[in-house]
Length: 347
Image 1 (cartoon, one colour):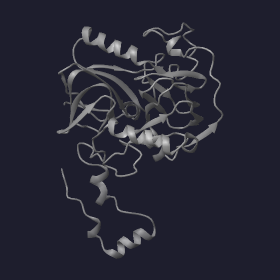
Image 2: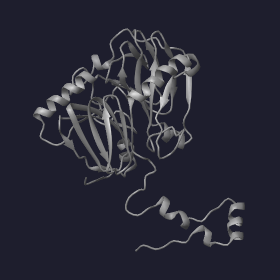
Image 3: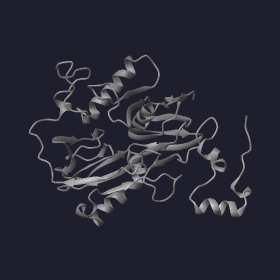
Image 4: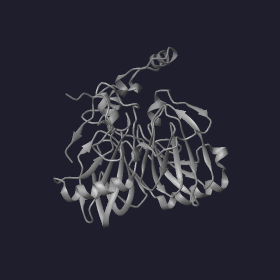
């Protein structure tokens, strides 16, 4: 039964002043704001960021600010629903585009938020995570989980740019966000685990079943060439429905980070995909292809390297044009599942 709740203005001024003096406030005027009926009311506004528009500004940042004065030379994406300066594109997701020029290194640090990188362009970049040197190739997903030391370097000839995705807004809200700096790491003299222990899907190193994996995050790099090949094979031999593959921890089968999930997607040329409405917010990074996405009835045209954000329970339609399209969806489904409230509703 819906009831019209009382407003703050209906209360006498002396009563309101008395509450302010002792730092209390009435709940009922804000009840529908914090507990709306049937579904949340998102602050997040859907948006599409053009990589073509951002790239010149990012390259100019390389001219204006040396990496030593920036630590991480990044332009972050701002949610239009939260206004200028908001370091988030959804309640829990921060997205930035980071530039590293040939010969540069970004200093080592460790921080409480978890991060992932999706390489956008360039060759010769690398990330060292807890001693593993991870080459950065276009489309690769590279993890830097919270509590893991990481630094970046560039041994190539052209600028390297990657997308950063962090659960930074969550840690900032919890007042738990901080970083510690340290010296550059000496990488181990061997390929990273994606090329050794976890070279093939479905295979993990043989060990005693009562002995856990040596790391909570055994695989930090997911090469895009293998991911695209798997999507194309799935498109031919799958059982219908969306062509999507989740990035997981190969030892546990769970999401590769505790609060953020990553899903590789393929849209066939001319195909329209209407996913179910999800309680998780999402960000779509376009690896390749061209098309448009309808978000709650509004059209957002995209092409390779663009980024699209979607709020909770958004009604989404993806349309691929001019050939197959590939995306990686970044979302906070794993966090919601751990909190016990993840939900899906019909499209």
